[in-house]
Length: 329
Image (tube, rainbow, N blue to C red; front, side, top):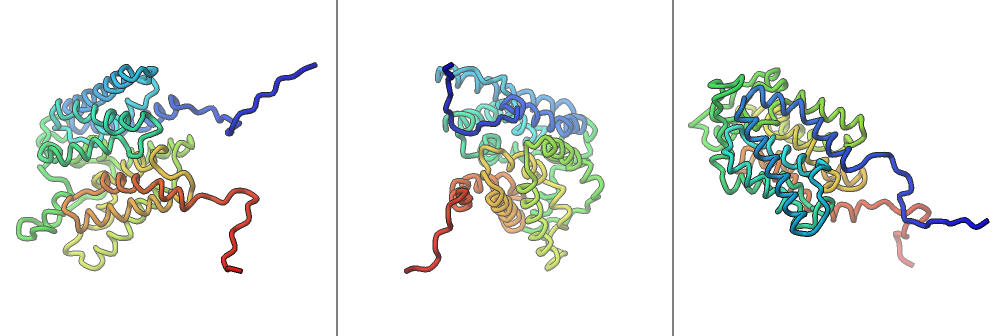
């Protein structure tokens, strides 16, 4: 009796996950933080999210159509990119900024490199940085007129006030913060970054699903904490408390949901620790001594550029291959 054998390359074991399941799982993990943003900021936050996600999905469909590729709008990747960008925008962002950003995230952040799996940079962060440097006034307008925080939020975030004081001490003072409010999410900021509690809950679900690992977030957050603690210990009258650094700005959403992007992060454990450490170092340096109050987006993109180099020098030795001799002769 003849039998047919099929020879294929690895991997030979499938764990049942797919792009569809992974992307929609991450979207689901972000829903608590998203809904909290809607509660805090009201309909403006809903509008920003809808416009940004819709623009990303339509840009994905248009790009696939023009390139003659199969439609991928339902696999969740475009929705996730649009949602991540929306959660990194202020609730006051105008509709055209959301549309431009959503389209740029897909076209400039992903499709120009060949589509999903080929992009070296996180697409949502590419768009966010593009918007930040092109339209800084709109990207730093935190005033809201709807939702729980209507008429209760100043025009500056905690990091913004701290940076103003650091650059021009005569014009301000270090902000007084309530750490419980910061942890729960009663503060100004981008739509999805304000609640560390809900972001940690969503990340815990992804960790349980084995969609993300703990090494990048832990290295990222710990490095920021160590450096800001050193700065605060040296000059507490000048620098913000390290706990405030952990619970404000985009550190949590960046470390938990954006730095962990499997396409743009290193492949092995050692590389991921180096990647997270680099992200934390750059974030702390920009926050403490840079011109911007926040450095998460810049740090992740810069470390994305280093991923090929990190992968090259942290590649594990092949099983059974002897290590090269250190000495000559």
